[in-house]
Length: 450
Image: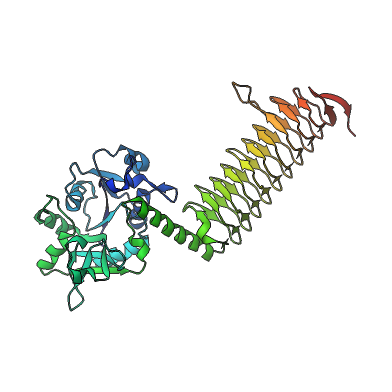
């Protein structure tokens, strides 16, 4: 027989008032991405299709952030979690046999954990399997009450628990896998709370009262149970995600000198035998090759770095580095910067929307913008491409082997030929032919070079 089909419902309609923000709680950044994306991506990995995300009526920002990665169901009134799940029924695929319910503010649940929950329910003759963890420190979580035979007998919210129940170490994580037929038949039977809301946890009591088996999967990692309701919990989730990410890269052959002060977003990739030094931030779609050394005190965002590169105390944004490139300290690569093999860029230099050819040396205190530098160019200290005239950006082209003296100003648009030399303080306002020495303000050619 074919395995039962699974639909995933993610609850994201809560008001999130405890986070005290104009930004919806599920859009607060975690690891550089909106909180809700973790639950959505886990659902995709589990089923290969978009989950149903239950949202509040005013959820345009959530829809904009996720686009077609989710199917949306609207909970018009905040009538509790059971009511929210009922709103998702029409949006689920046809002939769903199992329904897995999670929360958008629980970003650390692993795909492997959710798969274990699903598999346990497939093997369960009863209508539901819940996820639990042994974590006595999670004092505000509901307690899992078991009978003498070890079977689940009840879920008790912390606010309603007796002192004896509060001492129970097993708590309810808040993820469930239901038999779909039983779920849709049972939810309308749940009674309202004193506040007039309908809670999904009451479905557990309904199953037990009917003599049906409630199974539980106890996960080993307490960090997966972190739910984000306020900024203290958001920080705890960030720290747990960082530990998880850093451990994964260390096990893959990357050295982190001090993992506690190393910040690697989940979308980053690193090559083996690279070393990341303290207070380094790797963000966005950054890709780092093998045998690199990054940091300390370095920020790399949406940048591709080739093998055997060194970046020290610098900021790289939207750049591309080929192999054997060294940058810093105190350099800034902006969007469109491309450094070819063997380039050296020293302290207090900045490159924007420019290509530095193989072997270019740009030692210190220089700005290169909207320029193309050929192989082997030497950029003297204080060199500036004057690429902006107040209205438009203009290009600068510097030929192979050119040697730019200190404080050379290149007023774009301008072209400097191969093997040109400029004197210190030259202001280049017109093109210089190859193999020429140019000096002065404005720079003029004074002789041809051998």
